[in-house]
Length: 449
Image (tube, rainbow, N blue to C red; front, side, top):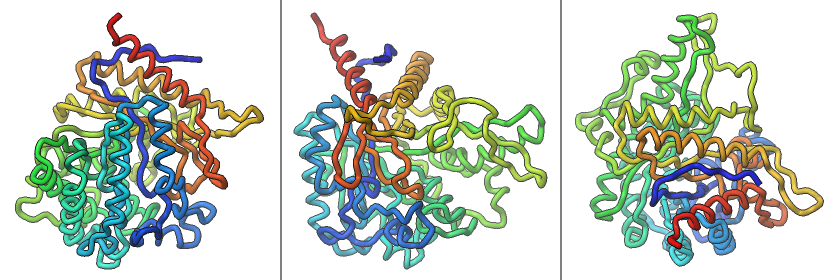
């Protein structure tokens, strides 16, 4: 089987990732409150085939089996998210102890298996009660987030040392509130910009809360970053590229690392503007221990007839089942840029992976050579970045399990493990064994003879 031979430094973390709504299921179990994704999935036409995360991978009940799979896989760390409505069903106030008990058991099982827990506090599942009160466009939601963070940290902070506040604020804000493609399905640029500001503000406040509650822990944020390339050398395409990058990437990186929003982004959304108060940008840009980067591909854009940037598809090249171009150099570009322009001192690749058309064959196996090739080439890109001096400290495959892929429902499979949804049977794919062998070989090479 093809095997990566890339060099990584001692202590480099190899892991896998999931998120709560995509795997847990059990959406009404043990007092969990309704989330915006529960409500969104119930809207006709919002999600492919009317799918929802109601059962997902039933990780809530089956996590001991999945931790055993992680142990077999040999990963150093597992990145998971905590469901806000499972802990505070109304978003604030009443604490559901049974929800915290679940994460207690999960963290203990991971530690017992020798797997380092990386906890993400928000992966898009806002309690519906808070959305009914205005959602992320309202400053009160950021204030409620701090209460939630403190509640979780007080319970798990004695065992969880690695925390990320938010996963992909761009998706939460822009896809949820401006384009309407994700929950809660709003379509307002003003709401999208206000949501982005309050999500970032809640991040800054959460950093302070985590450091106060869990002194000595490592705290960061996960930002998705896709390089934006012009479709040609035409100056209009180059300008379109610059505009997309400002709104898609720099709006978030500049705020977190420089305490400012780029003018190129604000000009595009005028007259909407972030509802900034004194001290907000200083809070957003509090120093971090690390930044997590999610990358899957690049964006290729040209100038439309009216000057509005238009995303186009590359004329050639392999695509994943998501329709995303396979461009390992994009990950290398992201990592080197973040180090060069933002001086990030520690970077984790917190998501990288691919969906392909996976089928369980008559031999009972799932053969996925395309995914192996994708992971191998992207790990090579990470290794090249490290050789160039970029402080990449770890890499997490997305995803451990096939799961609910948001508006695509169950049509896209990203997992190292195939999930037969009617039976919930887990079937490790060839890529699972490839990744396991890579980690086993690396440990063998590091063991003194």
